[in-house]
Image (cartoon, rainbow, N blue to C red; front, side, top):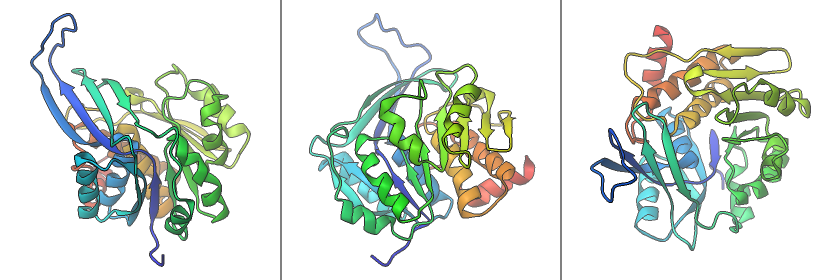
Length: 299
């Protein structure tokens, strides 16, 4: 494969069903709500996010041989995302159902289908990764098989370990060890700083970024630790699905691919995340580069 990519996204993609209601009564048999489907999950939001920013993206992952999988393939193709390494999960396309609160937060139910047991074609994956400027990993079980391949190819590795609870979580150790840039959600930590320092200890050259929702984010490097307050925008927060993915995409596009400063890159990532939070059940209306530049000038 001669085609080279700005970024290769490795992770799960599927269909999200988001359920919006002013009040959901779980004691009642039925509720009236607004139910919206969209392409979602970390691999979906990240791939579409890079595409919207004008980056040449490829995706490595799985969909089912079903209606949802075919829809995702067509939407990725329409957005210019390479699907050479989009394989078939025999259990079908992964799904999420998210019950949405009025503040935009969620209670999610995730069906990752066969990701624990799948084994991708490593030769195909290596051909896609070769020459990429960035490999953006999420944490389906099969993805760990590609970490040493990306490392051997010299591709910078970013990993999002999501809502990690403790630093010695055995499932996440491979992703932590290989990451040049490590993202995680602080949903399980009132103060993510102690965990961030543990993650920096084994690789002082690593950048560690903790998303803190309405409290903004923290960024730790060998030389500094800084808290960035959440951005205020005119549009309300209505849906936080994909916000962490947008933070990562905005930061990595800016810092790794476009060579902006660390501070500016964090700010641009925050803009991408906050913009996503104003979109209801939409991975097809993520921030574009002109819009990102506009908000960056304003903020």
